[in-house]
Length: 341
Image (cartoon, rainbow, N blue to C red):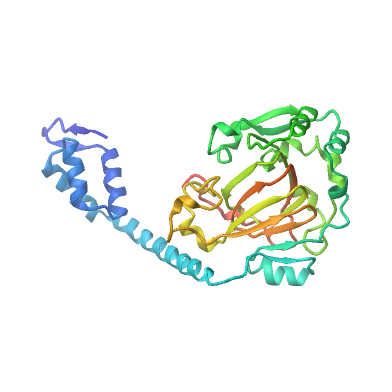
C-alpha cells in the first residue's frame, strides 16, 4: 500500500491496496478513529483519509457487501444457537451392533447423526488376517505412494500434495515394523488413486455392508495405514463417510456442523485448531461442544457430511474409508468455495 500523486492536480491519492484495507476493516466493524490513527501514522493526509472513508462508507459496493454480511451473520447466529442447545444433550455417539437399512437412512443418514456399529463387518477377512507379514506377502513387489516428511509442517494435511513420496511396499512396512510413535509418515486417502492398482489384492479381504453401501462400493474406498501416533487434524468432509477400523484403535473427536462458528474454519474444510483435539486454544466459553469415541478392530463409524473430526491412531492402525452409500452423496458437486475461504 502506498500513496500516489495525481500528476494533473498534484493531489495525493490512495492505491487499491489501501482501499481494500479500508473496506475490510469497515466490514469487520473496526473503530473509525482507530483507522484514521493508523493511516495518519502511515503518513497519509487527514483530509484525504476523511474523503476516502466517507467514499467507502457510502459506496454501493460496500453497502451491497454489508447486506451479504448481514445474511451470513444470521446464518452464524442460527448455527451458534443450535450449537449451544447441543450442550444440553448428555448423549454421545450412539453405538449399536448392527442396523437395518431403513433405520440407518431414516434415523442417522437423513438426520445427519453419527453412529458406531460394532458387528457390521463380522464376515470380512481383513480384521483377522491382516498382520504386517500378511500385508507384505499379499502385495509383494508393489510400489506405493505415501505421505512422508509431515512433521516439518503443522499444515501437512492442507498441503498434502507437498508430502507425497514413492516407496516400495516392503520399505514402508519395514518402517512400520520398527514400532514407536510417529506422525511423520502415513499411507492415507490422499494416496488412494495412486495405490488402487498396487494394493488391489488387499481388497479381496473386504466385503459389502448390506443395506448401507451400493453394489459398486469398491470404487470409492480409501485405505489408511500408519504407525501409532498418526493424526488427521480437524477438518470436515464434503461427503458422508464410513470409517472402518481393521487393525488397531483410533480415537475420534467430533463436532457437529452447528459448532462451525466456533471451529475457526480458516481455509476450505480445515480448522485452525489443527492437531489440537481438545480445541484448548479456544479458551473457556468459546470452545466447541465435542464428542469423543474410540474405534476398535472390526468396528466402524458413520461420519455425516459437515461433521468436524480429528482422528488419532492409538496403535499401529489400518482403516478403510467408504463413501458409496445407497443414499445421495454427491454434495461436493455444489461446493463452490474451495479457493474463496
